Structures are given as C-alpha cells and as structure tokens.
Amino acid sequence: AQSVTQLGSHVSVSEGALVLLRCNYSSSVPPYLFWYVQYPNQGLQLLLKYTSAATLVKGITGFEAEFKKSETSFHLTKPSAHMSDAAEYFCAVSFSGGYQKVTFGTGTKLQVIP
Amino acid sequence: DSGVTQTPKHLITATGQRVTLRCSPRSGDLSVYWYQQSLDQGLQFLIQYYNGEERAKGNILERFSAQQFPDLHSELNLSSLELGDSALYFCASSAGLASDTQYFGPGTRLTVL
Image (cartoon, rainbow over all chains, first blue to last red; front, side):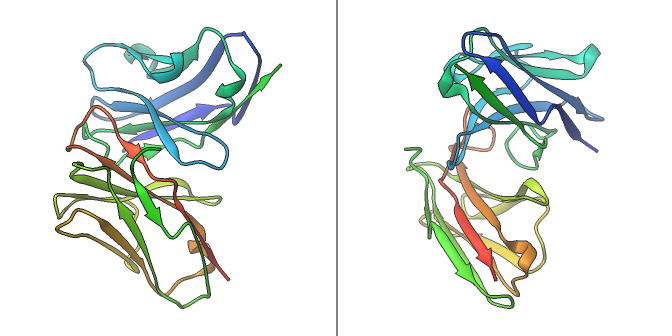
C-alpha cells in the first residue's frame, strides 16, 4: 500500500522567508512522487515530479524537492516566499511511474504574510 | 490557460439523478485522467484513459463510469447521485502514459441537493 503524510495542514511564512512543506511517504516499492499546487478557486497544477532520475527535483516557480530514501521524505522548499505562492499544496505518490493511481496527501495551505 | 476544457463549470442536481461531465484534453494529448476533490474524501484519482482505452482505475464507484471517444474527449457519467457525490471533479491530460507533465482543467463543481 502507498500513502503520503503531509505534516501541517496550515503553514505561515513571511514574504521573503524560506518555505518548507513536509511530505513523508510510505511505499512498498520504489515510489514516484509528485507535488501539486492549487491556487484559490482554481484547478490543480503539477509543480514537479520525482521518477528516480535525480534526487533533487526542480519545479516551476522556484520550488524544488529532495527525495531522501533514508528518511522516506520528499519535502518541498523555496528559498524566498512570494505573495503569489499562497495556495494549497498536495504531495502525492504512485508506484506506476505515470500519473495514474496516485494517492494524494491531505494538503498544506500556505499563507504568506507581507 | 492549461488548454484542458471542462463543461459545465457548475452543476446543481437532485439525489437520484444522473449527470455527465465533459472534458476536452489539450490538443495532441492522448491520456485523460479524472479526479474527485471533496471535503470528506480529499483528492482522489478516479480513472484514466489512454487513446480510447481504460488504463487505470482508482477509487471510482460502480455508479460512476467514464469513456474516451475517438476525438479523445472524455465523459464522466455519475448516476444515482447521492449527497456525498457533491465535489469538484477535475480532468487532466498528458501527452502519453509517463509524460513530463500533466495539465488540469478548471474543474466542474457538482452540487447534489
């Protein structure tokens, strides 16, 4: 069985501060991991995905995530938060390599304080 | 604009009814995915089609069915609707089965009264 746990349903950071959104996974086989973002009243957008090619994955809008097998983690980071980063972020896992049969986390709402 | 279109944007119906949600993928994309986002269940993968064939099933109820047509658009049919089916239904598309990226439509908000 596969699952992801997102620590913290709400995270607040000051504009310009480091953003760290935590995700831990559970998978009986090598996982494929994803981060999605959902801006208010909008659809989802794929930020980045890990497919074992490189442990550090760079995504759109300055975000990146590092796959750490020893910690079963795939945390999302951005060095400097911008007001436009305020959104809900979802971590997801699959064992297929594609986007099918992904299991999503419960989401983390990021608030950016000016 | 992701290039994925979904209609209708909003749908309000009554329990026991049947509705059809439509999705048009980005031009050239062969793979279509359906997801449900509800307050109770969160985000769930429902089903995937690739070039007209069903490729993967997730937590899709037996009351729900989908298909992908020769022109690659897809429809999600929801029948015998219950209050708990109220949710946002997203469609996404990708070029292939393991493409670099995936594009989402704006969603259809279904309200069952």
